[in-house]
Length: 256
Image (cartoon, rainbow, N blue to C red; front, side, top):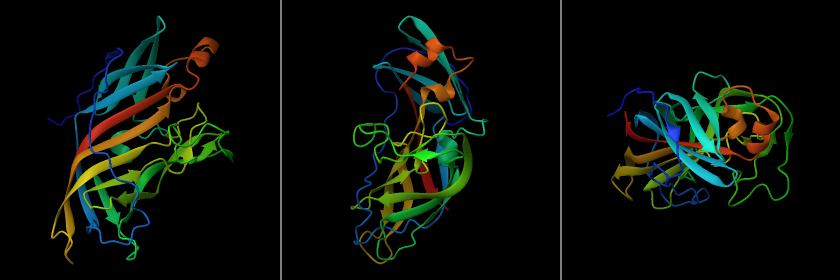
């Protein structure tokens, strides 16, 4: 069922809630054929958003309705309430980062695995700085070592880059906009992506065309301080240093 049900759940330590496709983002430089994904796609979402919160080395999960909402984490004997408010001008919710109608382009005939989509993304209104040594790269929240935004965040439409896997059976689209949070503002974390499997016809022929997206998963990360609900005390700020909130929702797509 897909609807706009809104839930707010108390989060407890448990296993991740949402599973989906993991796109192959490694074929950007490939010159092999890829399915034709160009055109307008209609996207349908699951009616829930999975939440994974990482605070002080502990991991908690919760579940929200498709429009976001509040959830509470009990960490080290104290409740922390966060609010994924999709009406905020500086917050991009999963169904906004990968909207219900998207137009996909493949502009480079020599590199057919490259995708371009115009999507809402964070833009920094302050200084951009290089990440501190040891804070980016594989295994971190900034795997691509994107620049750190030191000011406020506005959301504007800009080009997002995606990659169709070498086999043509999946894609990964990068949603972060090329900047990452300073731990306080609401720039997305660097691992924010949309992944899906592709269903196609005419494989490895001239009319090879993708027609459906299956087992899709949008993953968006924010710093915990960005979505903290209420007035943050010095104690709260100390506890939330390095805290991460990851939101995931499933989707399918059909070419129109």
